[in-house]
Image (cartoon, rainbow, N blue to C red; front, side, top):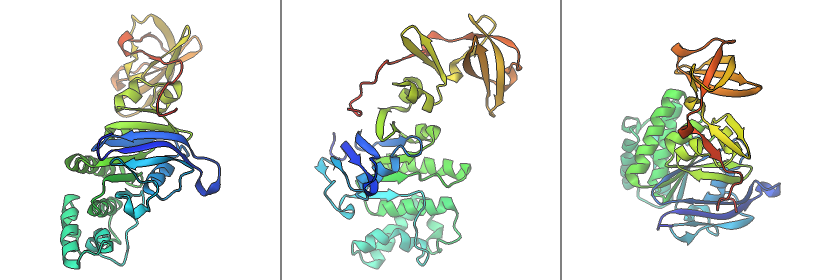
Length: 328
């Protein structure tokens, strides 16, 4: 692990003394990269972020940042900044003073901290709002302000918990691009939580899929979408076609399935669903369903018999059992 990377080893957490949420979880985030934690509700994503930040006590394991162990430190001594889904801004302060709060807590003089805060506000594209109150600002603007406030703390690690969750699609895209630009320009080690697999692919250098308190695959985005280590990973990332082949299971994504007359497999269309840039077509092949994504102008009708081609180079043999250091 390089000097400023994050390493979580065998993390166990039982919030409030209840049942365990994290069960011996391990995660490495290389310095200067973005890793996205993705998974269904209840998988433990937010619990992990809170444990890293020192907001949730550990039952076991350790957290290291920059080569030093930090799980015994108070949250304010960990050099970590957290941005939550709700911006948590103070209504009685203007935008600039909200951003300057970490500098105020550090004892910086007012004139200097407002100067530094103004530079961060410009970095997130909201310099014109410096003297505004936060009430009445859009959700996207408030989240940018929360991001600027996090940056003023000069963190070694930035944690973002569903930062786009409350925004409409247009603002989500703009803020997602801003997060990626700032992280890349600063080389800031960053962990982002989302439940959206497509958002994870757009945000992450790497994606870590969490299921039931453990990380089941940590890989580049293409790896999780096209080379899943288990059927559960395949299904989460939209690979619904899991085909038994002797002792193996073959996976193929719907967008790689081709409907063509020359297909060796034959089936009957039982469902079509328009999805904007494609149509999802479900074909029954002797009691087994195969899903294909086709162009809207090439959509067969329900009841049509069609041929199916499964390109060999797009088939992935799902490993019969997972052997992964982040599960051990």
